[in-house]
Image (cartoon, rainbow, N blue to C red; front, side, top):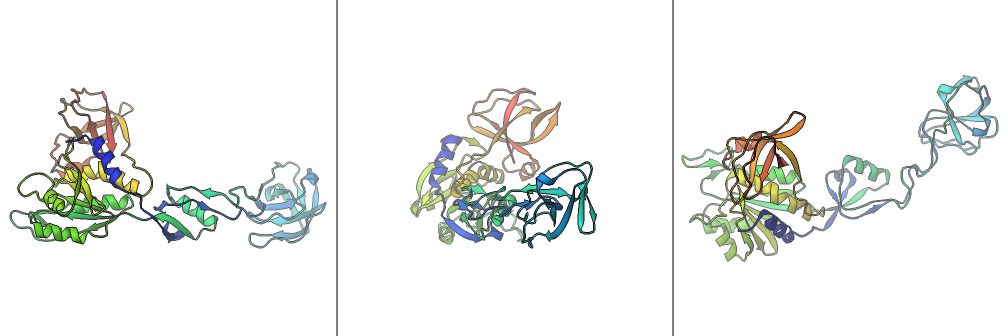
Length: 394
């Protein structure tokens, strides 16, 4: 049995970074940029007005000065001539500044009289011009890897990038195992329960950028599991749920080993999640999760998500821990790292965590109401209210 840290380090080593593919800009949000993107244009591509007003020569500005209006410059339709002494061009925000002008006087600081514009007796002298390349210049790049936000998509659009190189989404095949399972919507027999783990894990994985394939339930016999593993061909990761322990009906490790699985580890010193196993099957990482629903979901949070970030090129980002104040006392912990379902709140100005009174790994209702996992190291001593503890937000 290995530690959580050792298990995570081993798992991420099994997971390769996936290659790039090109997608339309419209589909790039939420994807991971796989290669640097470089623009060949300045933004703005010309000196542009940042205010509505009049383009004039700064040297001529004085209270009450009169300028003859010789034309207009609008966004998408510039004034083609030059602005001479005593001349002005009516200009609008975003429009190119005409030659000869080096200042845009805000229209609020002017008075129009026919073909003339007169400066106010009191005005705030600002240039009100955005220089060419103020935002970015030709040769500027967006560096990879990075998760593309809507703001990045807007930037790429301004850079005239119509197609974006992104890391391919990891395809994860999910195989729930067990004679006791039926799909949601089916009528369970007297000894059966509804398969929930795969749906929760699929939602978790898809939110993290993967393509989750929920395969048919594999019954507790060799033929059914072998068939399910064949259906998983083409996936970048295979995740089995249940059957990873050592009971008579826990056949996942035996069947996968017979199919060529090279086992990396089997059993982790954590609670819940001890039966976790991992290895490589035909060049593809295979992770066997426990069947208890809370165990499966917590192992997904702790192990699967860092594997996905590695495959997406973002590095193996272990879930970030925070410090909170314990809201109620805890007995000493055993020899396994314990991930306790808990709720969060603010008490006396401090982030406070209250562990749920029931920690059974079959209780999805407790997990659904939890805000965080309170992480206790192996052999952690008795903890009193007010002591600092580590949490993982859910």
